[in-house]
Length: 244
Image (cartoon, rainbow, N blue to C red; front, side, top):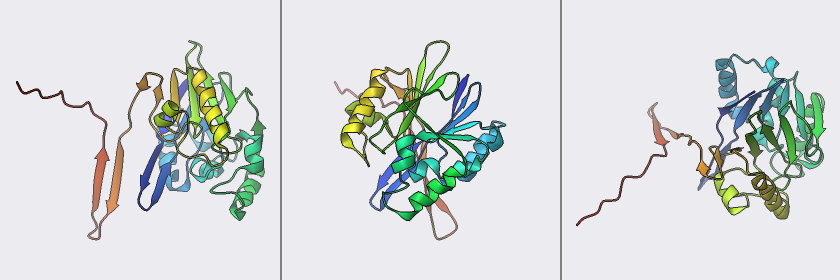
């Protein structure tokens, strides 16, 4: 069994709106499981990362959609042969951007043309992976728990716990469905005391803090056929300077 973060998740807020890229994780178990697929703007990147690992879309047996927000699911059509798993309430009530929009039902109709199945709490996904119902951020959000033969527990939390800040304070930045359920879902995952949390929009962490940190590069297009790029890295702070 092996777990690979093939695309890191990131969330950025600006004065002109939010920019989100959902993480995508590959689990190689008795079947190959992909947790979330990202959105169309990351499709070429997803294809390249799968190819780099010598995995074709046809090799993916199961796709778990943690929820139906656009940044987590729009590349699902790349995997027409896979079983598509999501929460029952998500299939009924979930939405791409906000409830009541016509594109929600159009997307669900397309999903139903695939091998879509709903999962409940504790349902088996693969030999080592199970579904965890974690509603609140969305109506039927599902996280994935993966327990290795060594007993180590990895949780792919989606946006139930989108980042380390949400894990610490017990509530995600945004709850689109139900605040109380969101808080209960964070507590449910924390009570598992996972060895590793792979969140929807942040670097992996556990109760001791970040396990690794992802770089983030902001690219600004300029008028003279150049790009201005700003790369943000997390490095240890300098030692204090003490003047005697």
